[in-house]
Length: 57
Image (tube, rainbow, N blue to C red; front, side, top):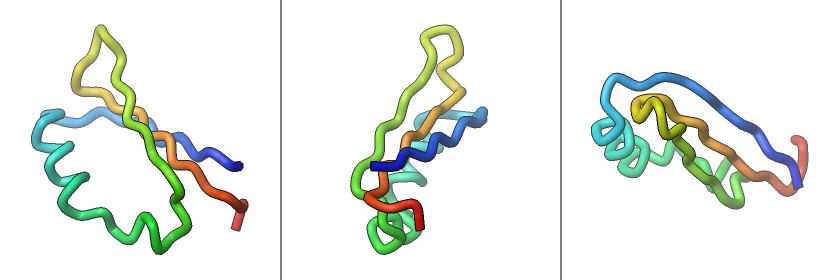
């Protein structure tokens, strides 16, 4: 299992989440097995996305 973490601020979490959910940009096709979205308690407009892959390629 390989994990890629992406971290970045977003202007509005609800708007970002709706866009993330409605446009998966081929995550599954790119080999993403699972993903997890995390947010720190002190900054609700900062996201961390963990993408899990079976292989490094």
